[in-house]
Image (cartoon, rainbow, N blue to C red; front, side, top):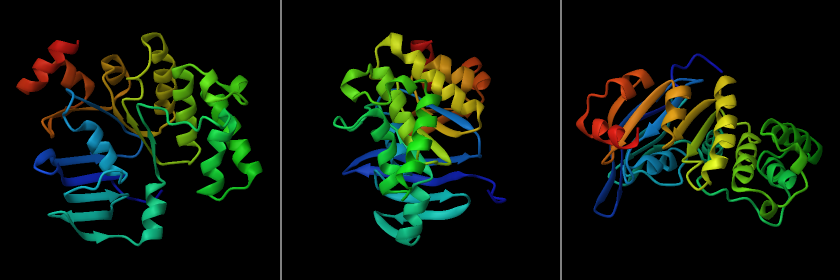
Length: 256
């Protein structure tokens, strides 16, 4: 892609639900190929931040840039600027998202789950969709489960299918919202391994996670959020080895 500096950028992002301020002035710059792990206590606003990026939540105020182009600008709950709807849709497709819950279609096989959005949203032929779906299902290690239904899969397998499904849209950025939090401990590793492979292949990733080992090993940058703010940001060595913020120190002492 062109000569932009940041693939994703937020300026003064704020989000309130009624009188509750969930995000307070979030400024974050993401370079292409960067893996950013977002950590922090429950209720810090981490998931809301991810959901704001791809418009599952509407921000109260602030700006979102994609590839250095202003994507959305809102102030006081009113939209000041947004790009044309068809362009907005195209830009949103550049963000794939994987949730805590797998949200697979229960009446569709693994293969069909990974094909459907390609056909209906990306307008691919069935043949094209099937080819890509199979290669991605193989990539997440489930080629032998192509014709299984989700109910026949473990949670870890379902989450790997969900990752393949998001990748099938060929996004530039992957957003992961605690993708391992609803998995049994023995299944967490298989999902993290898929994410590690993605990182190695240069996928830009924003991961809300409480897997500190993963954040240490894979993160280019670790962002600590609490009370709706980014309170600490740096390399894993800096954030884990020498945190400066009191809340970050307390949080890390409790989880490490």
